[in-house]
Length: 340
Image 1 (cartoon, rainbow, N blue to C red):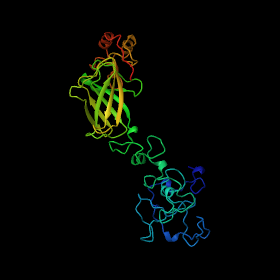
Image 2 (cartoon, rainbow, N blue to C red):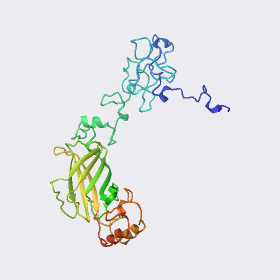
Image 3 (cartoon, helix red, strand yellow):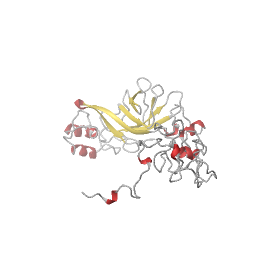
Image 4 (cartoon, rainbow, N blue to C red):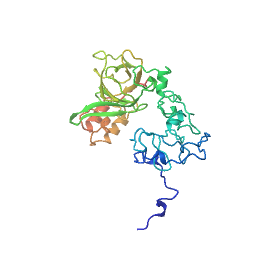
């Protein structure tokens, strides 16, 4: 078989930069003494009595990679140059310079003193340009600096500004006979209605932050009624690092819109609200129970009951059949108010 000429090794289209192979044994493994002298002052610092300080793209040479064990020469002369024409380094902002050089021209024993160095801010002194640090509220300031400079609160000390804490997914869970517990996905903005006859008994939230079990609590305020939990507050359990489970005793009232607020402890003002609406029989989650719901249940007679189809098993017995359609007819006329 003939070799494809487009993939011939040694042609100008080859990418031989170590950046493409971040576990390469060529990183930090060459001989510093083999570097030629900077006879033509390629770094434009007027010093020629030095080893060549830049690679083929005029990026700094001898940039240490902290993730690679040094194996270059001579001993005790780190940082070591990489093998090849290009030096490997992390460049989060694609500036063409190592991140540490973006923020400090004097870093790496002045090897960062090349054109373009030191132009990036580094408010948290982590040797990474601020533009590459997490900025959840997109205000141009890294989250860590928002907090330390008190531009944003972080009352639960999770290193995320309180205004960025979000519920990213919600589910209402009910037991369906022998099938077991099934959870109906509730959309964050629109189809947030629980239509099953048992109502809202358990809600699970996926978060974009990790709560502390000693700092998490839930409160409920409904539009049409006053909800009073049996034990004073709903029971909150942390299922995994970013998921909480809230059990409601008694269940949330029907034909209502209830705002569930996650609060990070009694001494913390960070709150993450979510509104769930209740409307028994509203299988299509449009806000009212009517003939459309019964007709759509009929279309699904005999379907297996799963997380994806549990909203059609109105009576939660583990089957989608005539019983569900008949019982939904008894709920015609019910409706759910809008969320506040």
